[in-house]
Length: 101
Ligand code: SF4
Image 1 (tube, rainbow, N blue to C red):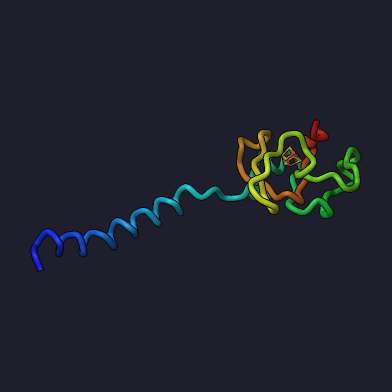
Image 2 (tube, rainbow, N blue to C red; image 1 turned 90 degrees about the vertical axis):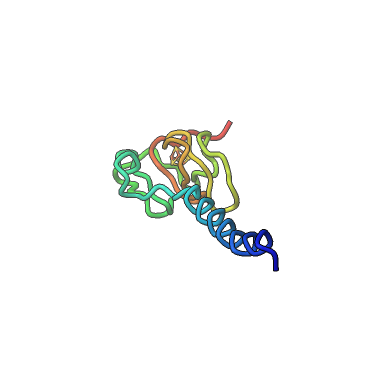
């Protein structure tokens, strides 16, 4: 085996590992309910857990998926413009909800 081929065989797994790690680093994390902005907006990842006594504007059945600030990234999650384009649950809700136009 020539040295160039040996170098390629050694380098290939390292490159693959590097690509995998960089993809993981760029994966977006969902906004946690205890995030300061999310807490201020009363965000819940499950709209059925919204404190309806506190958030009287909550309309039953409204969720992030039906909100104007939401952009779907699959069935279960999407980005929220009101929360810095971070990921939220499609079944979530917060007090900034505006009916999708
Ligand atoms: S602004 Fe809309 S999409 Fe964003 S967390 Fe609130 S309800 Fe969900």
